[in-house]
Structure formats: structure tokens, C-alpha cells
Length: 216
Image 1 (cartoon, rainbow, N blue to C red):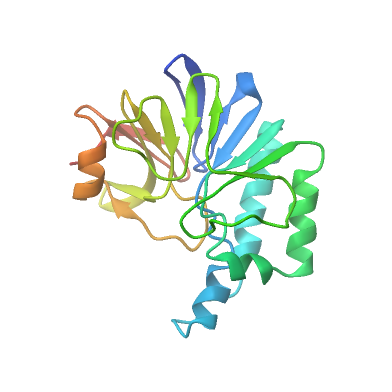
Image 2 (image 1 turned 90 degrees about the vertical axis):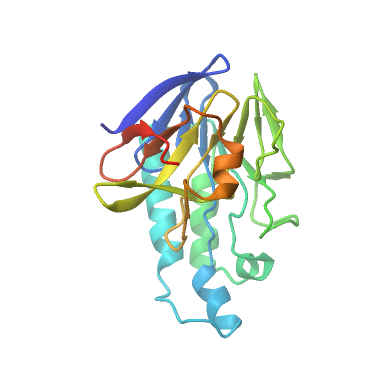
């Protein structure tokens, strides 16, 4: 299936196979951990050289999901850029691309641990966002309820292959990383096992979306 509809603390949400979250009643599209500019940051810091196409690929996929859902608000849930310098290093073409994506809609950047400062790329910049019954932030807080977050890049296996996954329980929803050059943390990792309640689900993304019990 291409999406999975579910109700979370009264909010009727839709997890998309692309890794984006859609809240149709609020006209909201949420993506997490774009990590734009990772290839530039790796090269700048002397790390392994990555093909310099990830910004184009990530923005292409983001544009596709925006065109499919036509949101009134786009919420980027932190670590949208690999660091502040990577945001400044975006090409003029990529800056214009972001401007076009922002046109006619509200655009919110939630601060992450990679990109904590204000951006000069349009939109507004917040530490967190409360909307209806839900709170959106970058990093999950252990005692939070009705929380939507990112940060961990969760993955879970299906037929021997790990896929980016939403993790969902009664208290929280953790989004997968949307960016092209993003690794992931297996759902069996102690950090995720501690956060997620027994009975949590993993919603695996990819060509189709699969819902399974969260592997522990």
C-alpha cells in the first residue's frame, strides 16, 4: 500500500510510503531529517567523498510529495541541513527551488541538533510546534505524550533488508529520515527500545508501506 491511515490522540494522520507524514484535516505535510548538504559537509571536513547529487534528489522527492498532497503547511522536523554551513553553501538553484516549494504556503523549520540556528531561506524557525493535540519536536522527550519527532532515523527489517520506518505507539510517533544520504538506527537499538512502548508498530517505507510489530 502507498499509505497507512491511523488515529493518534484524536488526530487522523496518514503515513506515506515516501517517509512523509500527512495530516489532511490540518493541511499539514511533515518531513524529518532532510540533511541537505551532507555531501558538501563531508567533503569540507575531509570525510569520505559522496556523489554531490543528494540535495537534488531529496528536493525532487520532497517536491513530488508536496505536489501529491498540496499542503497548506510544510513542517521540516529538524536536521533539515547537515550543519549551518551546509545551509549557507546551497547553490543558487537549490535556494530558488526551496523558494518555489515555499510559495503560497506556510513553511516551518523546526530546529535540530545539526541546524540549531535561524535560517535565511524563507519560512519560520521554531524550537517546537504545538498543533491541535500534538506536539512536534526534533528529539523525543521520554515522558512526552502525543509527540511527533524525528532524529533517530529509525529502520526495521523486512525480508532481510532494513528499511526506513515510522515507529508508533500510544505516546509517540517517530518519523524516518527523508534525506537521501541518511543512515539509520535499527529499531532493536536500546535507545529506541527504551522510548517505544510494548506493542509499538513499525511502518516500513519504500515502494510500498508495510506495517509490522516493531522488531525488538
